[in-house]
Length: 199
Image (cartoon, rainbow, N blue to C red; front, side, top):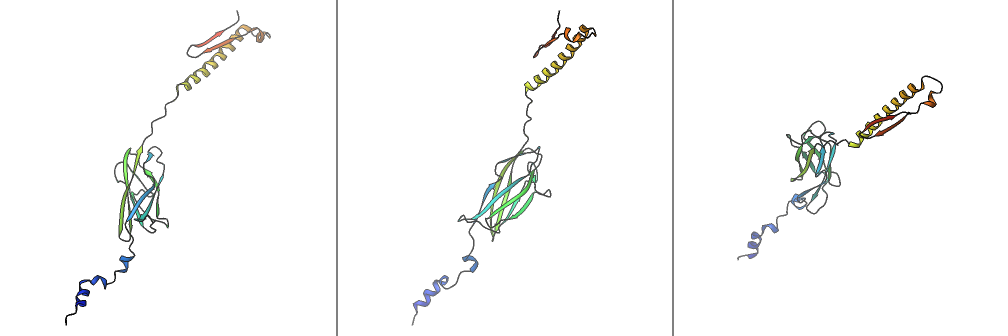
């Protein structure tokens, strides 16, 4: 006698075969969020160190701890290096899903570049980029009025010296020379020094 139930079971083997344990608890896809370092402008004159911070989340926006994050800096052209003069740094995410790349120093080449960031966890991989720029700040011009101040101070010193000389020449070395000799010095910016003595 034909048993239809046997055919139904044969046509639906998935209902009788349990799923793999790893597939049931498998983490979903990864997302990398750049928290610090994106759009930074580095001074090639000072080459000050910077930090990059990224956060690795799953597709449900939950942080992924223990993910391996690698930062790749361009080997040529504008860029920089990490500690040990290397262009690659690997960091593990903490319990908040964050990875911090420390001690990055820009090189002396001016220009824009991108740092590649790759996160790997449980056979899942995600990649993003951190855009930065190396620039050389323009020299700060010296204010013009500062030069005038120096000229005034020099002219004032010259006027005092001339005044003392005139006073001594009129005094003739007598004891009343200090009261008899009177000197007036006037200063004008750009007009030199004018010294007048009593007639």
